[in-house]
Image (cartoon, rainbow over all chains, first blue to last red):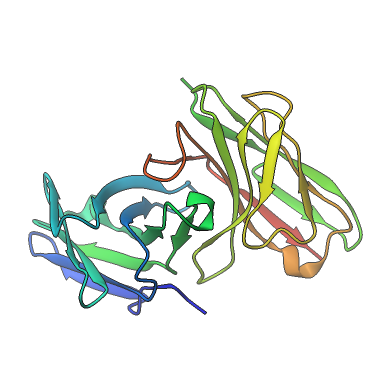
Length: 114
Length: 113
């Protein structure tokens, strides 16, 4: 049973526009959420995170929004750049359970076209 | 700092063969992890370690073994390789568990034929 779901396998966006990547989760005990970015033939790299006590966290062009009642989070990239083309993984954590280990979604491949 | 390094980058095994995937980190992190990523899937935790001499199972440990004799190294052993173990394997490390960012190595692509 997938606890973290990224239902869009891919997303294509024009350079300069907004990219919105979505993530849903089923476990209400998750208390921390992270986004990782992965280029081909490289390992994932951390992008941004949010605690369940917040509903928004911003870092430069990247903003993550959390809607706990809907068990939904989204990553906004504004403006999108060609270098943002990568696979984005949503991950969730229940610090008190799962030995504090991350649960990953399947990823969304973002393509930003010039 | 090299960060997290993994060797080899690629490997082809025959069914029933064994091998060790190497992982090392130079950030003095206590926590280390092994993940596998199957095509079109997310990363799944195989084993993790909270420090030298201490390891524990993750979500998909069957068919694998680990050891952690030093802070820096966390090798993953595959015994009796099976086609189901064809995957990309990532090693990661973090300063603490959970809330802290995990740093990933570049991965090892393993094919079992």
